[in-house]
Image (cartoon, rainbow, N blue to C red; front, side, top):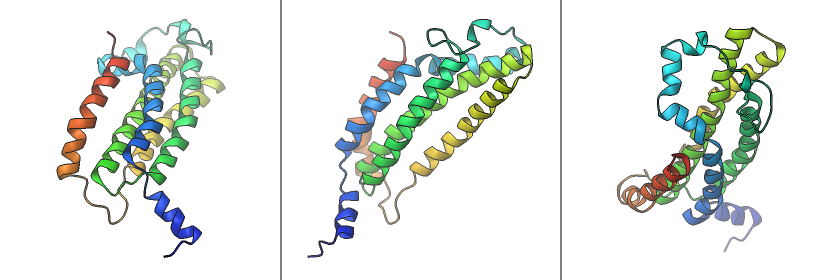
Length: 205
């Protein structure tokens, strides 16, 4: 039997069970969902799109309460700080789970894919709201160095997050296509309860 360190490491890398993925990423999803509640509702209820298509995002009066970095107010700085902290925690954890999770099976792949997509999608919601505020701020009061830096940071995050998600969802070479029995099992026993739980966290009661 080959028990070299490299073979043990490779074997361990491929043995991460789905429940371990859920134990690591589940609490992270809960934390991100709590923070993303207001931005998610802003997008899910269509208010974000309405601001864009009605022109309010560019012509509406900027509410000065959103300026600054006060953490007890709905400020631009608060949302950017929240996003930075959550992204700094989430990205390494998602990468770690991706490395050790057994994604060669349908259950393993979909457990990781659903949780990763939910976390990264909610992070995208968290950062898009301050970007919208900054756009309105600039149109109403003009450019400053801080506003430009904030816009560039936010736009970079909005571009990189979908790329990060797409890269994480790639299946490992030689893996079985994650469909059929395993996918149906995930849909019935995992996806539906997860969506119901996430909805209870994000949506108002």
